[in-house]
Length: 551
Image 1 (cartoon, rainbow, N blue to C red):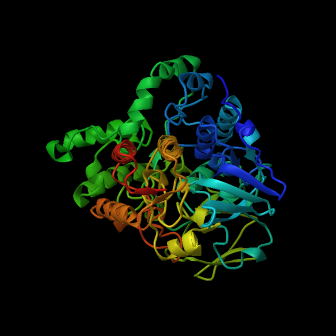
Image 2 (cartoon, rainbow, N blue to C red; image 1 turned 45 degrees about the horizontal axis):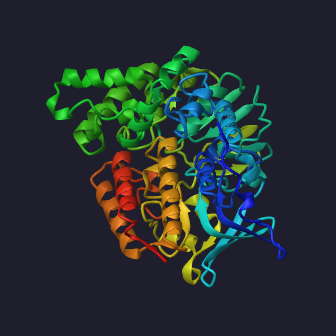
Image 3 (cartoon, rainbow, N blue to C red; image 1 turned 90 degrees about the horizontal axis):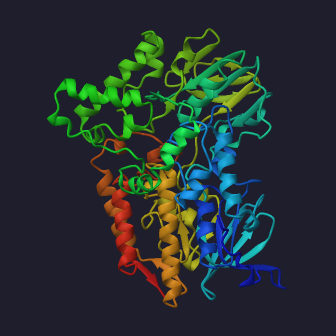
């Protein structure tokens, strides 16, 4: 596979005044950032990616906690750059773990010769739009100054960890670690008294993985989760040859489904089925051991309270059996106040059975919330101090908007993106924000990629659209691209109208920003479907990007 031509011969980014001059800056070297760097280099632009990590991977660099693995099948968690690249890397199993995924992203970066244009160990501190030059003045935390025409933020949807979650954390005598900042060298948990705070998708992976090695584990659970058992067979070369032969089909298939996977809602309307037929569909997808139980059974579960209740009760019954119908554990660990699928649905491996072990205790934080961290451990509102050696914070992220808000981004008239999004989160299809010319975003709010998508599908689609938009502007002699206020307003209204009838917006979750105090309430992810979103983007491109002013 031939690497693209390195653009260094087109312009020298280093100038005598100490300012690095580039055509484009990409923030992030994860799934989106790597692909965006590749696409802009293909265009011949002088471009550099910057990442705070010491290597590529983004999410798969930072989230190296015990049990970390993705829950999109390996055959579709893929780059669609070429069939050759697809075939050249054989995953070891259906849902590979973090280490293998990080290796795969390094493999891709090496194949495309991307690393020479990535500056690691560098965090972007600020980016201010200069209205005189119509370019971005960017600074790093080390003080490097960069001047770029285009700024493409590929910061990730879940890359702003909520680290300072409880009062008194600094007083703890043991070790506190956030799952999203797990140290490369790992942490020895053997025989230790460990607290895990949080039972979302990440917390579940940690809990089921470390239960066999810790001395004792206290799990602080506030919002129980519906869970689906993962089926994760090993992949042989023959298996991968099977998927490789379907490369073109898979590449096209994932573009049009609801969530960017190769499965979709194709079971027929709920109302037209008998109770027995409905159960048969649910059993079929339950046995598949993937997110298809959530994203390929009945879409009515997102809208209809009655359907939601029946699907939720189906899952609850499965969970009760695994908890030996223990009333206390069922009360603490099985949701009763929201419907299946209105939260992120975690896949797991014998997670519930962990609570049947003598060395594991579930602490109900609805009955006695965490009050603070003390030197000995965690104090709850009932006055009890839970003494532990290690506290693992699986408390999530400021999703979608958090990573961009941690950079001082200022657009026209010095307006602050952070200030704007603190009041209300608005974007133009998650691709641009009005008032911030030549700033493009992937994985930002109000696009499917903010949450409701197989990420490789949606991130590549956004990168391709951004690349096409920049190419169009350059071909027409335009230097500045900015979403109009009218277009952004129209998109926000459409986004909200699409979300309003769903049960998702009636449920508190990180999807709604509910996990961050004071965050404006709005569904972070567009819920109109990946295929519909792509069609709208394609129409914009085909018609000369109406809604995006260029000059």
